[in-house]
Length: 353
Figure 1 (tube, rainbow, N blue to C red):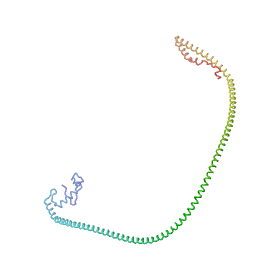
Figure 2 (spheres, rainbow, N blue to C red):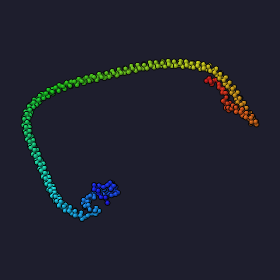
Figure 3 (cartoon, helix red, strand yellow):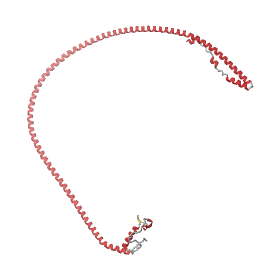
Figure 4 (cartoon, rainbow, N blue to C red):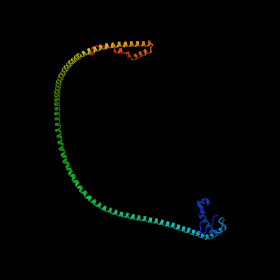
């Protein structure tokens, strides 16, 4: 139960917290103290301050609703009558509108028919006016054609007379022309005869000129042939003489070069003679030294063999050590020294060549 309302209205703050867990929800709204106070005031105004809020007085509510319905029934009847009257008025208005639309369409159709009739009348009037104008034009053209026909007739008569005169003049001219043609034919016949004679003369002259040309050509060919042969003989003699001169000069040059080569060979051989002698001396010295070196190598080998035998035969370590040192200090003899040191004799004639 809520505490009683104070005389100044409202409730203390601790009694009106915004807490949905205390009073719950009413739809999407959270029930607050303000909402409860508002509903309580409505309840007190409707049922009185002594009516408990937890029980509903259905009888009192029924009486009050009956009173309300009794008041609302005349209003409902009046509203139904008004709706029926409005429906009738609306039907009448719709019928009137349909009738007016039909009359308007009929009037428009009549207006269009009248306009079409007017257009046809105007077209007929224009066509009649055009026909009248055409008839007037045709009448004027007919009159003009009649005048032109008269003028053409007069002109035709004049042209006929002129044609007759021209025909007479043409006959006269034809006779003159025939006379001139006869004279021209005779002149042409004479010219053809003269031309035939001149042509025969020209042919004879042409044959004569051809014979003269052939004779002149043969004479010229013979002269040119003889002159060409003479030139060829002269050129041949000239070339032969030049060839002989060149051969003679070449022979002289070859002889001169041969003599120079012989002199050069002789001088070269004379200059090589001391060199051959010196080479022979050097070869002899080389052979002696090679023999001495070979003998020395033999002695060295014999000495090495003797020292080796002595080293094997002695039992003293100190002596053996000394002999081994001597053997190590001795030079090693080349096995191919004799082959390389053999003198190669060559004849002086080979070097000279």
